[in-house]
Image 1 (cartoon, rainbow, N blue to C red):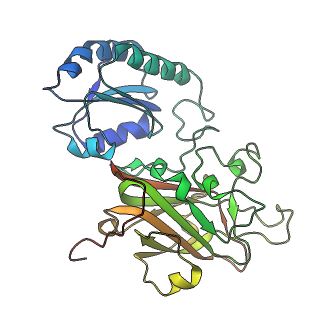
Image 2: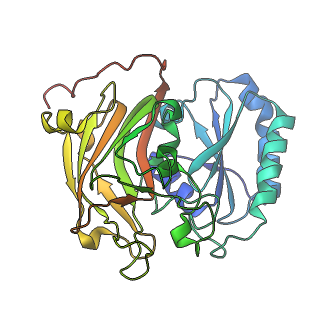
Image 3: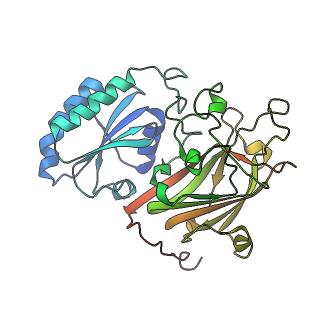
Length: 328
């Protein structure tokens, strides 16, 4: 029999999210009557369904781990959040033993199915791909983007849409061509792309992961093989997508240069560490893909992942610009 793991730090929780395919988190407080009432039922589920590296049950005291509660938008207790490969997939608010049991037993059924890459495979299934491992102490917060406000300039319409960049499915280039046809983005008239990503909550953005999987020479039916991104300019808290000429007149918050050795050979993914102090209160992000690592006029991006901490939900009206932290 296994008991829930009591979380004592953000780092401990992040490690569990990386190691265990499913994590069930019970956000509770000692003074909360409903929390105490449902605790025996939760512990019974943990004893019955816990499986090493597959399903891990945790308890998070919101008074002791306020950063974690804020990161996942927990405002009422108890709140139960189910994570799959580090990403929150379902939430149960309140002391409802039947609803909690239904959700947990459903995920137990999913956990009994083998991973594509075998037991303990991380992010390798066709339907839930996450690129590289999440940075220690931070979560995948890609799902915080506002899909209605996404914009991408200079996209070739023969390939995927802007939402393709944020899909959780495994890129077809890593899946023997299976999946959606042309499930990536390529630039159109030249190698530049301008991506605008508004968020549903105010974020602390720690790092990004960019996946680019262009075919090797001779493997593409087209004459021109697209490039991987090389230089990226990042802007925060803009109210709209920047025009290319407009971006040239604005200093980026950070300029990133991806070196050829930065691309992971297995996943085609590069990790971008950000100047964290400059990305503390982010309501929107503009990524200007300036150039690529070759002489082509085409640039290819398959997936983008965002890591950090999510804060309170925002009213999705007009975006308000938030300045840099004082003294920065």
